[in-house]
Image (tube, rainbow, N blue to C red; front, side, top):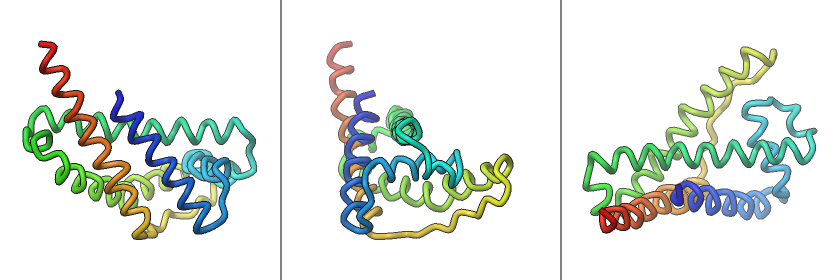
Length: 155
């Protein structure tokens, strides 16, 4: 649970900073852009509720990737024993999976209920890649290693 919260908070904070520095985009607009992944382009015209929905989606994704890493770490001890390298590799995997599979598939799904949905075209970018390496992969792996040790000590 802590890994998902840490990952989600670090990732969205880095995204806020990056989007503001590169495009002058305010946090609420970025959160609406996240929500538009399911709601379509009209989400950009929404209010605070749409931004909150986007934040919820963001944390849902962060928790999903954390749960997957945790489950894998139960079977592959290497992920816990070498948390830094496995976290960086996992961050790269998450970045590629999100841009090459999850987001394009979400656009396909959205086209089922929103006519005229444009396909998602991946825009691979170094700043986002770095954010995923550190704020996603590394944050998740270090949190899983930390709390795995605490659970082992309690038993």
